[in-house]
Image (tube, rainbow, N blue to C red; front, side, top):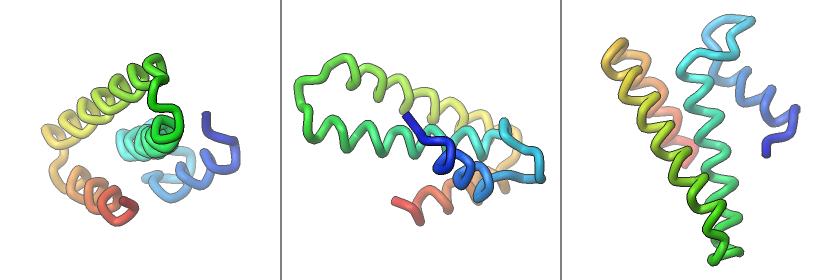
Length: 88
């Protein structure tokens, strides 16, 4: 679960315009941060299969968003993947 401040900073870093909260870039960034947090949780709690299922669903959701963005706008896809690789 993301805190409001952390969520706001993620949105600010990835938004296209001032009131943007739902663009694919923002959604992908939010999902990526949640995936990272859940991966850390699962390193501590190896037998938490319910959370593992949620992680797998989030990874699939991020992949779907990236695939859609790649089809619709390759330049935006390239920038978001570059940002994600820089963070990881």
